[in-house]
Length: 248
Length: 213
Ligand code: HEM
Ligand code: FES
Picture (cartoon, rainbow over the protein chains, first blue to last red):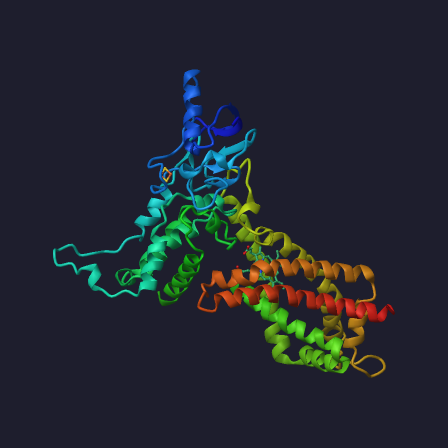
């Protein structure tokens, strides 16, 4: 198929940047979206132009490195997939496709389509962990009984790959789905209960300091999340946050 | 936001119940209006709380929207908001502003004359010149003008939209999400549609009965 691409180009974080048009022909419907960009970059390279910078690593939907706002949706029009898992057969011959970086004040553009998502790391550092004594007599985690339903919910929350699609989709650029998944994966387990109060308070504080917007429960994040992280996690975090603030 | 919203929704229900009386029994409506208008608990405790809640709600709404706009300083060239979220949820400010404009009219129509009669003119009797309760006939007078009735109806349709998102959003914001969640969501949608449309019904009822249709 032949496609008309409109792609955000920006030299560096200080450059203003803008949308540029590119034509690409003979795209196979079996290519992944990133492979299509690889082909485009090869062509740019052959012409002596600067290739388009974009993030990727595993290319199998597990690392959370790929991003891209495609036709106004993070990871494109397909559901439950990352950009690296998106196939060109989801588009039609002659389509115009808009490709932009994930946009948020807290995700500054580094170059072209690459954004700095280290705000997520800093939120994790603020409380996304359990402190375990590794003296050698650590209790075997399997020896602690955990209800299956709770273990399942904690596991579901832990499948978040931290790609930032929730922020990119949200009209408020809110990071609540991400943070609530990271809070929930511990809040539901006995090992996480010990530090639960400080965790939620510190992580929410770090989130606000990074300049993300506030959640208004539109639910866009849940729809766009490649891992299907549920809004239930946000309700749980709000609950945890309220009770932790009251007990403070 | 959610706390003021819960209060406003309870108020709305209470207001709806009293207005409904005007359809069923003018006497009952008069008695209740007189009670609400003269009871010190209502006048000096609940009414200030209500005014505070309304002002708090929309001022916080504006601040929230402004902050959220600032959280995305560079806009997308293409943003497909309809792909993943309802129009209602994305336009709370729009529906809210229409409701706010309506509240302005509503204050002018009912609240200002009421305060003038009671506190400026000092007439706490609630009676008209003929010595009968005045509330029902005052209400009727407001629903003669077709334009006013139309504005009233439009505002309540927008309120329904506001609540289609808002009702369940308030529960989500406060983390109330137990075993009843599925039922509550259905109830929320029903509440959001039935209560505002009930107000529309009341307005149309008085308009049509008076204009002789
Ligand atoms: C009787 C009148 C009103 C009722 C019953 C009502 C109800 C609600 C409810 C239930 C929410 C959701 C709260 C949450 O998620 O935490 C909400 C949010 C909101 N309301 Fe109202 N509201 C009313 C009037 C207004 C007015 C006059 C404005 C003025 C602009 C307004 C603007 C907003 C905004 C901006 C939001 C937050 C946006 C969002 O959560 O998406 N509302 N309202
Ligand atoms: S490149 Fe790893 S998830 Fe897409």
